[in-house]
Image (cartoon, rainbow, N blue to C red; front, side, top):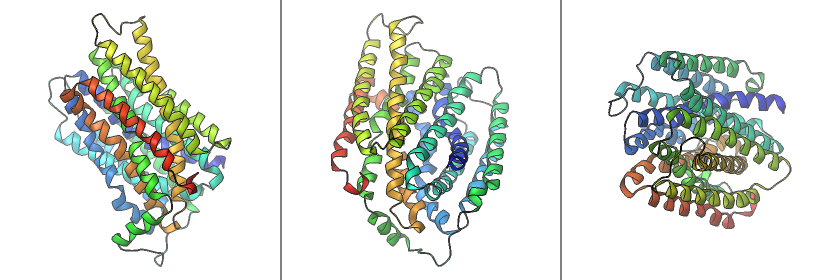
Length: 412
């Protein structure tokens, strides 16, 4: 089992790099250069290829091997990073990202989305039922570590390293990962899909996916469980920037520091699952704690709007802001590990020929539930004000707690 987990950890770490680049580095750079919250938030629309994973997931199920798909997509990511290295970085005074940079970031997300389908297929096929807890812990922790390295890590290094060098380092990392994926013995032993396997037309494919036990409930849960957390998490660091926090500090707080706490939470979630905690029971307890943490974060935001409040070094407010970010990331890590375990368990109930497509359906809905609030949070904050936004995020964070009471018995 350890060989499987080490391989998956390496590949999921690389998979987290594009997300960290666009969720950690670019938003703070663009906001620091004067872009509105709306424009910063709308750059998350570049994640659109992730919502189309269901279009090519059947190809991964039916054509070629996961190793080939994984290797080719990872090589293409290295090529795109090489092209990004030739472009100048964002600079003060521009109203948005240049068209060529947006096109390359869109291609980066396309390659990463294909890579994600192939890698999730490997995980579903490689892991035994008893390995789901540790396997999903490795998946979530490694992905977040890659995101932290590309987000907060690059933001801290950005003043000392040039834009071309950063992207050349990313390109070299992708090419090393592609070589690992191609040479790994465990991946070469997986069976390729046969032409005679079940290949239904699209309408019947959707019916087959929805017929898998527990799919309707799981789909609804993964679509809603991150709505409030993701909206608040994407907006709160930008509001701290508006209240005087520096971009380099936020690179440590919301990048490396907060993601370290998230990784710790994911690791704790995996340890509890390995000790035979039921995922749904764990979710019920931690979601309630997460709701309380978001209420504290909202109260802190209201306090920062009062005269005299500041985030100067040595103040209690600064410490409370740091604690708030870390606490929410820690609890969110536990929630994510438990949720991905439920998703993978549900997909393993599907026929083997549909498992990659089924998991991609759930993962697409999970991403949609994170992408929508992250994209629209800036629009809502500019239109309604941050206080009303966070009140809405509190309500949204209570929905998954109610949803757990409707969970089907085959997922418990």
